[in-house]
Image 1: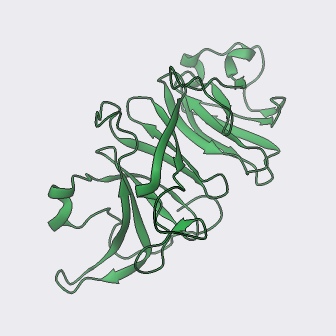
Image 2: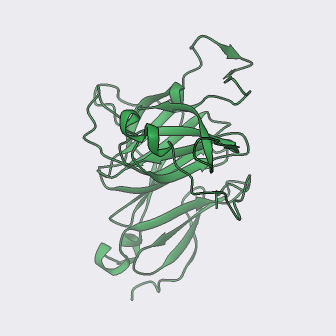
Length: 249
């Protein structure tokens, strides 16, 4: 299942993998741990910290007798100068309209990546591959880091809100303006709002970390669920709309 309402995967051919067995070792893509995209773009986050873009259309492989998903593009935007200290890409979200990707790493770092529109070969704003696919992964560039090293998940709002919500292992949900300027000396953004069950007297041990965060289709509300217990929803301005945790419990 791919969220976002663009494409649902029911029965699939053989399992999605960034690479086939013959090319896995030299390309060092590891295994697929996360997935994001829309009706045109399919991005996979891997155990080696790479982001690989595959074709939606499975192509038959005569040499193996099975089928695989062709690699359209690949990139390594989360490595600091080639340093892979942030580990695997465990969660991904993609916004076509904001031309951005949020990548949550196994280290707890969260990278805000933007699509580079300055590369050669851009056609109507997109770099197009041999079969007409938009090539996104190789054009991703690190804009800044989000969170406090405790990120667990991330979700873009609709473009009208221009916000990305980042869940944390503390249970908090931090909201960042995608287009706001960061302090590039430290290369880390500051949230404009923080939503947390701690406001109602709940410690991280009570709820667990943030398991997932999602926006409504119109961007009017954001919802979060925690690993141990509890679901809550807030308005886009941070007012609590509902919560399954009793206040003051």
